Length: 256
Image (cartoon, rainbow, N blue to C red):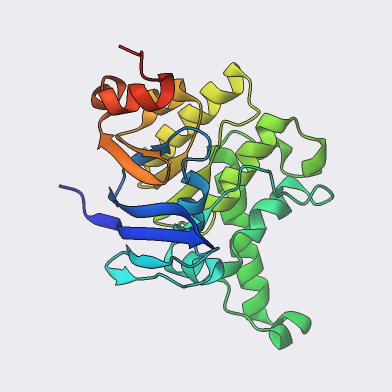
């Protein structure tokens, strides 16, 4: 049995009088691909933001690799092995594809400002290591031939793959993906699915929010379903597809 990687325990978040997330619990094991789904306004983004350190929970906690990490900042979580992508691409359009991916390696760097300024041997060595690892990740997502192109010139689907490579370059234990299929055409979606499955074979684990149900059903080991901030179901894709509460949440009272 694979080891427990992420544990979300009774996580809640309120904004003023609005309870955005209520007592949500679930887990991710090593080499799992777990999806979080739900209708618009279900609390998916808020849940993701709490797990990834963007907003603190009102109550409950997040445990990552055995340690409670609630309240830690995103850069601290990156150092511990948890990285994240966003629904809206956050690439540096004027930097090369390779440079964009190298940005994700910063959590592994040990050189300080002084050594970087004087180009000390340790800094040069780390920069070479970052470049090699970034190039390797681009090979994994099929974009090594575009390493020296400006990121802003790439089609949207390729930019999404650059973002995945950047999230993977520091070799994190868990990658959080916020609607990775958003804006992709069917061919691009299939390519990204293939990349994620290949990365899972290499030991990566994923937690993702997604609206593309075809993708979710194709790659998720388990699905967590939210509605009005509460978890209404959790299970394998085939269980979720026929769960009455899930059908009701998506299709209304008359659904069968």
